[in-house]
Image (cartoon, rainbow, N blue to C red; front, side, top):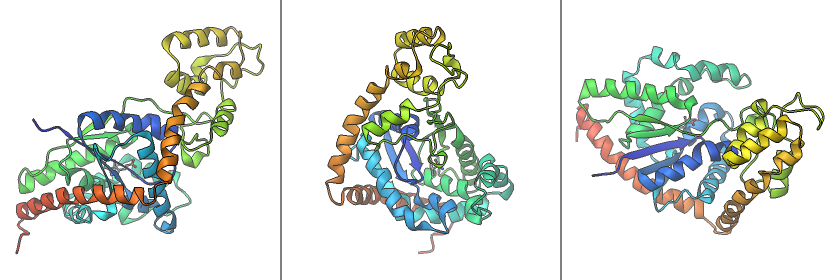
Length: 331
Ligand code: TRP
C-alpha cells in the first residue's frame, strides 16, 4: 500500500525559535519516518504581508531551511522545496479562485484577526484575501492526504476541504480531501510569558549561543506574584513551568519542582537550572550540524533545487489532469 502523503509549509520569517522547533519541527521529524512528506517554503505567502519590501525574503528562506536541516529534516526522506519555483501552484490558484465564493474568504477568522494585528501594514489586498486559496493549491496539487498544522491554521485547512469538495463536484473527483493533522505539542511561551513569536521579541532562537539561551531562560518571566525567594510560588501560572518544565522535566521531576516552588524551598533560578542544562544539551548537536551546513557552500540551494525538481514533476502531472477535467486541454 502506498504511504499517505503529508504536506506542510512555513512562511520564511528567518531564523527559527523554540516555538517552531517544539510546536512544528519535532512533529515533522516524526512524520518523515512514516509518511511520504513534502515540506516547503511558502515564499509567496510571505509576500501577502511583506510585498512592499521583499528584500529580506531570500535571506529568510536560507536561514529557515538551514534550521530545518539542522534539526534533522532530511532531504533523503522528505521533499524540501520552494513554492515560487513551482509556478503550477499559481495556475491552480487561478482556477480555484474561479470557484471560491468571496464570503468564504471574508469569513476566514485569520483574515480579520491579521487586519487588526498588523496595523502598520496595509493588507487589504486581493492576495491577502486569497491566502487560503493559494494554500489550497499548495496542498491539493500534491494530492496530500494529511496536513500537519497548528490550531491557528486549522480554519485554512477546513476551507481547503470545502474548496476541494466544490472542485470535485463541478469537474469530477480529481483531488482527495485533505485532513488536518493537529500538532500534539502545546503552545510554547516566550520570555515575557506571551506566545513565543518573533514579532514580540520574546524568542529563544535555535541559533542563539548557549550563553544567550541561558541568560534568556534565567530572566524569563515566572509567577509574577512571587516577589521574594521566601514567597511560595504557583507553578500553574508560571510560563517557564508551563513551557520548559513541561518539555524537559520528567513527571517525577515536575512533582518535585511543584513541591519546592509551592513551599518556597527553592528560588526561581535554582528551579530553572534543573532544566536549562537539558535545553543546552539538546541544542548542541543542532548547532554543530548548522555549523557544518554553513561551511558547505550552496547546500540550501542544492537541497531546494533537488526537492523542487521532484515536486514540480508531481505538480505538472496533477495540472494535466486538472486541465483535462476542466476541458482546458486544447493541444
Ligand atoms: N499558512 C501557513 C502558515 O502561515 C503556511 C502554509 C502555506 C501552509 N501553504 C501551506 C501550511 C499549505 C500547510 C499547507 O503557517
